[in-house]
Every structure is written in structure tokens, then in C-alpha cells.
Length: 267
Image 1 (cartoon, helix red, strand yellow):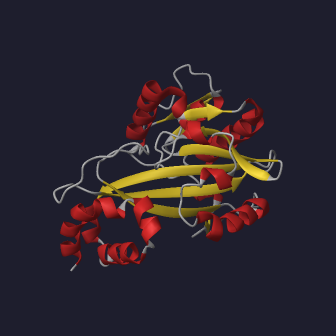
Image 2 (tube, rainbow, N blue to C red):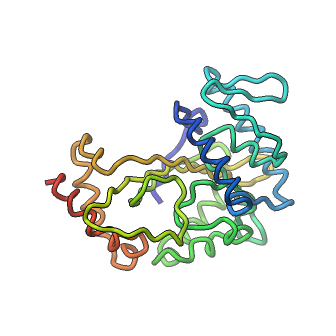
């Protein structure tokens, strides 16, 4: 799973790109509506706890850019006002660049009960809301046999005092934060590729027991990896070692024509 311990003060990364991310969220909600925001009524206590803890974190650990005037949270980097939506988790998601997801235990399974998900990676919130983890990850080859038991145990034993984070990566043939599963661009040897990195954090909310899952997406032109010695070589080693079914799921076969010019850069 690649999880590492996270200090509470390192929960959210804040930078000058915040305005771009918040504009992206507002545009996605305007165009896609409930396809990028869903919240079950029963999740309101967890939403409230997440909002309270995130607000406290931003004021305490990013107080150089966040401030509060009563109920209003302000940021010098971007307009983080909610523009009257009146939906708690959605309003909370407009404080940060990260997507926010809540998982709660229901009859022995951890289920997705609420999310502001404007930068998905080949999945749709409207198809996953209310479903347990094992169903959310159904399309991933080999997931159930290798990771489902580990994730179930991890969720059951995650402590509020020990939040964790991980990075996930993929490749995509366009510059865009949102990847929906039905987007199929034409790929040839001239196609520009982008390296997509997701910083994901998992934190147990102590009062409700819900798990808050945050996802911050970073996009860079693939050739920018040349600046980090060994990065492209390591990426191609990982691609070449990926099992066939998983490689198809990740789209490495489709991206193969465009990848060749980057292999030359790694030599």
C-alpha cells in the first residue's frame, strides 16, 4: 500500500496553485453537478467533524495564509468562500486544493458516504457513493487477491493518533485534473504525456470514527522528470515490470506510441 506515517501538521499542502484548483472545483461542479459531489444524510456528523478539524489545522499550521473572522475562513492565496452552496463538505472542500472523501463503517464494511471529488482518476463518484471499498476497487486487476484483506485490516485498526499518507502515480495524454473513465483521446508518437502524482492522506476522525481521505493531484510534463536523475529510468523499469492486465488498466499499452520518445530521454 506504500503508506507512511504523517505528522498532523503535514496534513494539507498549501501553495500558490490554490486559486487554480478552486477555480477547477467550481467549474467542475457547475458542469457536472452531483457527479462530483455527493453526501449521504447520515454522514453529516462526520462532515461536521472533518470541517472543524480541517479549519483548526489550517489556522494553526498554515496561519501565514489562513485567517478567521468569526464563521468565515479567509486565505491570502485564493477566494475560498463557498458562494452560497450551503453544502457542508462541498463548502469545506473550497478551503483546500485537495479532494475530500469520507469513509464510514456500515455493517462491517467501510463505505464511501460523502465526497467532493473534482479530480477523479478514471472513476465516477455517482457510481461509487454508498458502496464498500471492495466494490469501489472492482475494476483494478488483482486488487481483491492482493490488497483487499490488507486494506480492510488497515481501516479497522487505523488510529486517530497515527494518520498516514502515500503517493500514487500514473500517466495521462492531456493536461487536466479530472480523468473520467469514458475519455479516450487518440494517441500517437507526437502526443504530449503528463506525469500525474496524487498525494493521498488517511486520517481517523476520533469522535465519529469516520476516515477522512484527502487527494491532492499534481501534474507535470513527463519530460520534466529528466531534471531528477534516475526518475525516468525508474518509471520505465516500473512500467516494464507491470503485469499485463494491470498495464492495460493503467493504459500503458495505449500510451506506448507516445512513450517511445521519452524512453530516448532516459538513455
